[in-house]
Image (cartoon, rainbow, N blue to C red; front, side, top):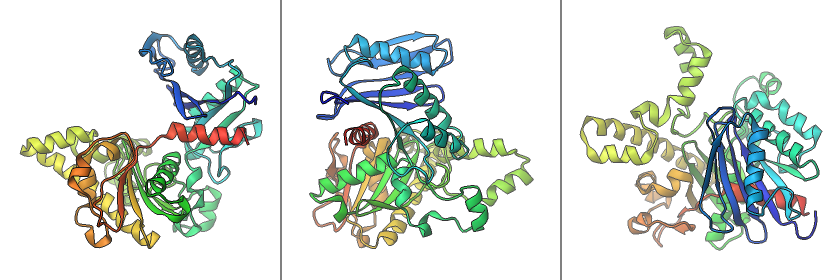
Length: 406
């Protein structure tokens, strides 16, 4: 890597999409960002924004048969802005990889052996890792000379002690099939817990934080001195909080009951719990803004939305209590991601009545909007309550650059 190579391209490859950002690691500035959708269809769409020049978003549609065609289209857009993949200023490509199992506990430079190991983990993330692998292979083919780094969603949670990561099932069976709690959204939890400590003017090693990552997918983590000691998602992203379309915690016997009584297949139960549950299952909406609108409108429809909101909040409060017990001392609670950052009623309801636990929300501070990390708790509160915008792409870029420039 040359001394002038300070840029990192971050790729998040899905089964039919690629999200990307190009960042300059001298100051973390975003030079370009975009999204390719509907890969493999005749209506493939690329939306590219040249942030470095302040230009307008450019959108193109066409037949992008596979990820190779999609990434070549991305490369062409970047080249049009003078930011091509052949630039000597490009230091590395950082890839989001959902599942790293116990094998990958930190960002890792990708070689053939690493790629084979990521493939071995596909059974743990059959919907995500194959797409991540496709993106890696395509990028390596385009720039075989450039360092490619895998940053794993699960890595931050590998510091959980065994008593938190283990399920109470037969140990031999669990080990044979790699059944344990792994956790996800790790890059977000790492970034937000560190930013929360900075907001308090302290080193991460001095702070105990409960991070609530609330988007369409949602997870909580207990972070003690910069290390995750518990998290709500488990073997898969289905466990834990109520989410947009996922049930979160549920009696596992519900699965057996549905198979016996309703005659549902494994695939049908899987679809029910992952795509037709959570908020959308409770009230037909998974957009918190629409749920709040329905509540405010009242009537029978509003009552159904209110029930969904109350179930959502109840689960949040259970995890706040549980992780307070796990940590022993809580210095801060941090709300992040789409709902956590933007839904003031969610923050207010989650913290309401927890004064005896040292938690409170100031109504005026909570109602204000900002893109910067901020406190929303009153000065007298023993536990700081914060809103900390997450930045998973920047976290991936920072981890990637730190590794290749070491």
